[in-house]
Amino acid sequence: MHPREADLEALLTALADAQIEFIVVGGVAAVLHGAPTTTQDLDIVHRRSPENVARLAALLARLDAEIREPGHRHLRPNAQQLASVGQLNLSTLLGPLDPLGVLHDGRGYDELLGHTIVMHDGNRRLVVLDLETLIEIKSTTGRPKDQLIVPVLMAIQDELAKK
Amino acid sequence: MFPRYVMRYGSDMAQSPATPPKQQESATLAELRAASRDVDRTLIAWSLSLSPLQRARAATKALKALNRYSRHAPSRG
Image 1 (spheres, chains in turn brown, orange):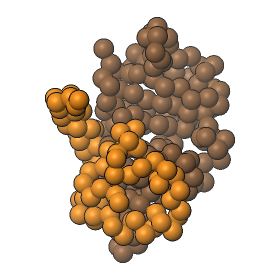
Image 2 (cartoon, chains in turn green, blue):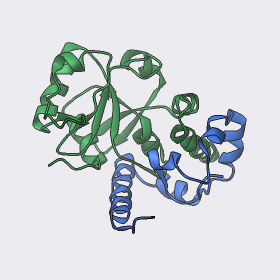
Image 3 (cartoon, each protein chain N blue to C red):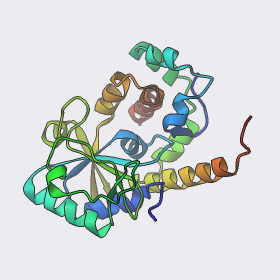
Image 4 (cartoon, rainbow over the protein chains, first blue to last red):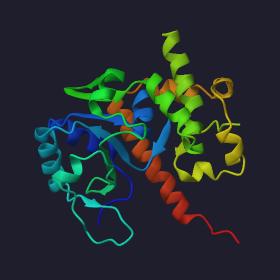
C-alpha cells in the first residue's frame, strides 16, 4: 500500500537523480523557499519532451505509480498522458506525486523556466518556481488555501531582503 | 487573522471557522501584505537556516505528526 503522505525529500531526490527536468510548484515550492508549512503531495511541471517523458515514465514505473481515483482500479500512468497538458494525480511508493503538463494558467515548463530559481543541496539541483511567481499564482487562484500561504511567502520575501 | 503556528497546507485550512472562505476570497494583495506583518518570523528564520532538502524533510515529518494526531483525535458530535 502506498503512503498517503509524500516523502518530499525522497521524491525530490528520486526525480533529481533520474535526471528528470522538472519545476517544483505548489505547496512544496513554498516549503523549499522556507515556508514552515506542510503539504500532502508534490506538484511538479515537467518538460514534455519525448526523452524527459520517457525518463519520468521509467521512474514512475519503479515507484509503482498508480492514478489516484475513486475506483482504485490500479491504473498506471503512461507516456501519452505525461506528454499531454493535463494533470495526473498519482500515488507512489514514496507518496502522492502530481505531474502537471501545464499550470492552471496554461504555462508549461518552457514558459515557467524563466520564473524559477535553482536550489543546490549537496550535489543535487532543484528548479523551483521563484517567490514572486509563486505569490502571483497563489494570490490569483481564488482558492482560500492558496491565499492563506501568501502572507507567509511575503514574510519570507521580507526576511530574505534583510539579509 | 493568520495562524502563528505551523500552518497546514491543505483543504482543512480552508474550513477553519476563524477564516470564513468569503473573507479569504476577497483578500487583496494589500490585505495579504498587511497580514504578512502579523506572521511570526521565528519559524521562518529556523526554516531558512535549513537546506532545501532539510526543509522538505521537516515538512514531511510535521505532516506525519499532524496526521497521527488527527487520526487519534476524538470525533465531534
